[in-house]
Image (spheres, rainbow, N blue to C red):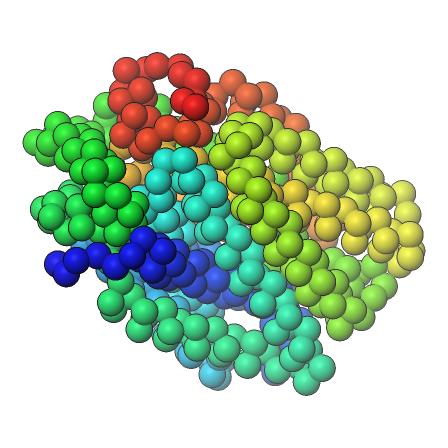
Length: 460
């Protein structure tokens, strides 16, 4: 491998490619909230088919998440992200020109495969590239760029709403996917993945470029190599079945489920539709989504810039997020139960609650879940374990996205939002008791602590 470029050049390239994959995740996941308002103008949709168009992406994400973790462990993080870029491009092109609902559902499933791969591999890629003291902020770039992608989807949806062009809403996602593929063809894998796959010298050269310090690179490489040596002879099944690993898998799966049962994707997928039931036009609802997306970008930019996740710690941020999200959903749920459906007051409360909820999520559970998942699993099974946790995240997302219209029709949006608020209240003590604080620790020191069953405090 050639001598590494300067630290800033290597770091910018690595973070930019991981960020672009996350932008595609956000765009392709978020654009359906606008497109679904106009698809029925051309392709007839029953309520069941409407749910299928939305949730088919989630099903694809489940499959993509499940296969991408082991693939990333075996073939490397860079190749897994390259596969995601190819899949994103194929899915966007196919869905954008779909002649029937069945074809649309099929290619939305394909898009979901790319989203699932990105949801597992981008946090891994960023976490394994970042130094310990910056890992929370760097890995938070994943959620920041997902929010950027979601905001771009909202802007595109609003702009194209005036011509009701749902096809171009979807097709636009193919262009950044091609850029991602071209960029990844020359991108490096992570140092830990290189060492694990038998390329220690390439790993050292990359670490020297990322850290800008050969001595620090040698120390980090020694830690990685020693852990890999200890685990080399263990089979994957044996690694996954170790009691301490099972506890971490359970914790990761629980956190992944908790992120979804707090109700985020009821807002991502259905906020424009909910707002139209409160007496506003489709264009007005999409304008709110667009403006809220811009505010989301500002919120998480402040969080990343201030290093909140690394300074405050993972657990305090998660607990604060539960308070803000539950309070905002309870407010809109209670208002929907006592106010007339087309009341301007109800619309105002709903807008304020959705703004508080989505911005709280963007600052807390959005980024911090993926930071924690990328930190707690041992190197030997990190990709596979991330895939398991992410699968639970997408399974819960599928349940939420498929059932929200039905539950809303049966009991009303007010009851549904209050139920999600109650879920946040239930989750609070579980997070308080079960989630370890991982800030300012190297991935290798975390692994040693978890293996020993140590309840530790962060270093620094």
